Image (cartoon, rainbow, N blue to C red; front, side, top):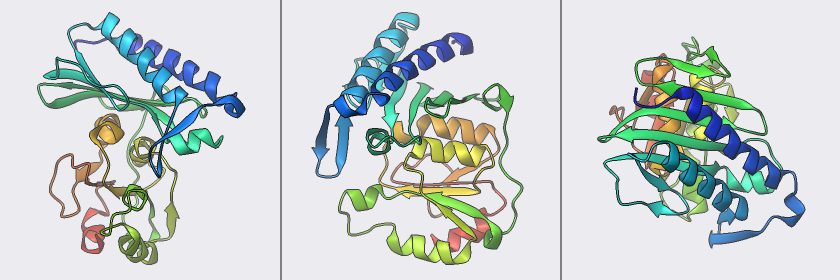
Length: 254
């Protein structure tokens, strides 16, 4: 691997400290709207600026694509960054938000970090080397029955006022499972599948920076990553991540 996991962890944790400084002073946080239901804060901008500068300094050979600042010139090999995934949760003082940093080389995702500073959970994976949480290896759950599974989802489609949304799909799956969760950060949702805390996650109308890092971690932990028809690959507009054991059971409900 052409990067150091220790250097990457140091940079991401330092960026997490930047985020926490804002999180601990939410009364003075400046919040604006990119659209009627899509928020951005000064913390998002500051964290992304920190990551862009630090990663560019440590690894000048890679380009950068961030949710807030867009793309630099070199996009053949690049960092893909969501500075705070779960901005709305962040702005309300909730703990489920995360920094998401993935490395893509020649259109292949090769490393990913998802760090939840308020929880102090650090997820990391490199292609072919397994997935880790706080230095310990993680794997997907052994849950083999959809009826007793716990699943998570999100509603970016509803936030965007899309007519084709997740509501009917959620009702079908909720009735077929035992537990349903909505945490508010797709990056963390994918990692929770990797960690065996939930057995499947799906959502539609996301962006690659929402899930890129989490997908590396999930796949290294043994998860399946498909679209709603079961095609393997990374499809931000309709992503389904499972422990593999319940994939064939959940697909007919998608």
